[in-house]
Structure formats: structure tokens, C-alpha cells
Length: 102
Image (tube, helix red, strand yellow):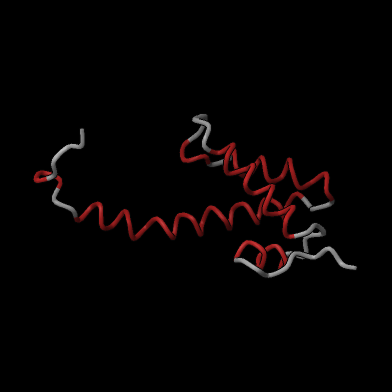
């Protein structure tokens, strides 16, 4: 029985397209740990930490370092793309008339 990731999400589709030799749940678990590690305030927006964690977690499982790095960079770019509309709306907001919370 093959252990290829199932294309149940965008992350699974990219992992499958990279022919990663691990299951979808392993990729999902590794990405969750990497994202959690990227929240630690040692870099700007977690850049580098997430990528290092993905390579560190997936390489012992047989995933080439280049593929793990590519998956992590892809995830970062998709996250950035998802945040751009919110950033544009925030920039267009009139902050002078906003009431501070609390």
C-alpha cells in the first residue's frame, strides 16, 4: 500500500506533486510543528525557522531536503498571498477616527 500524501488540501497536493515519500498526516504534523516553531520571536515573521524545521523534521523520514524546503517556501508564499488583502484593507482604513480598545 503506497504512503503517498492524499490531495485533501493544498498542502497535500503540493506534497504529492513533489512525490514526498511520507503520508499526508506526517506532512501535516511536520508543518504544524514548523509553524508553531516559527511563532518564536527569533526572526522576522518566522522566516528561516519554519523552513529549517520542515527540513529537520522531514529529512529523517526520507524526504529530500530540497523538497522539504520547497514545500515550506510554498506554504510561506501562500500565507503571504492570503494576508495581502487584509494588509491592503488595513492601509486604506482611516486610523485617525478609530477608537482604541480597552
